[in-house]
Length: 344
Image (cartoon, rainbow, N blue to C red):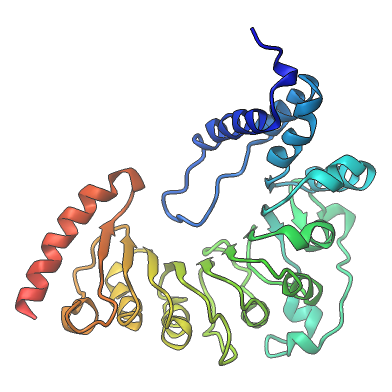
């Protein structure tokens, strides 16, 4: 048997690629194709242990172990920051491209910043003071995330923020994300049934400073219509949106005003799924791929599904509760589409 620690670097890299992919297969998100599966904690540990195989494995392991990381507690974040700051090898060889954060606790931005109408960009940074009795190590505060982005933001292409309650971004966080020149994917999730509201103005300010975004995912419940700058989101091609009566208007307006290049829509509806027609109609001139969890009963063929009138043409529509069944869903939906077009 060949001496494994003397494998060429390319062979070692290929072995690690498939090793990591086996872990990723266990994590799937059939509701958002833009979300890349992170390595679970035990997968990262197993990868790091492979550094003991031989010298040629050490550097190759780091590029796979520290590529797509998920954080769900302040303790894990702090340990990672300590490792990064104390290891020159990790700092030099790790190439973080995707970061996801869960269980984020957002401060009361209306209280901290004055009001929901405040201009986020003109405000200074601030310090969140958490009372000790309210601090939970299973939560992450935005300041923890700021520390990570400060030293690896230059390599990032994807970010996910999942808030425990309402979603919102501090001025310092917005500034740090603005400096990430290669950011292509942004995912924001919040508890749609929580009592804490999302801070619409801070989300608006964030989207105004991310012109390189190609994919945006919003699942945040109640949000006011976003008054984005005219040139905001010029390269947005993919939108994943979970809509109900509280954010339908905001998502629809976003598609009307900044959806001219959106060719792929993943529409995730809460009970009132028939309102999908409003969002789809807003993208009628650019939409090529549509994923829906259930086929709406009301979808005006003459306004958004007639490929004869669309310059680009709607080339694929699917009912995709599971991506593995996409082909079957496409076939069924295309037959329904054909009937709509015949009667249009």
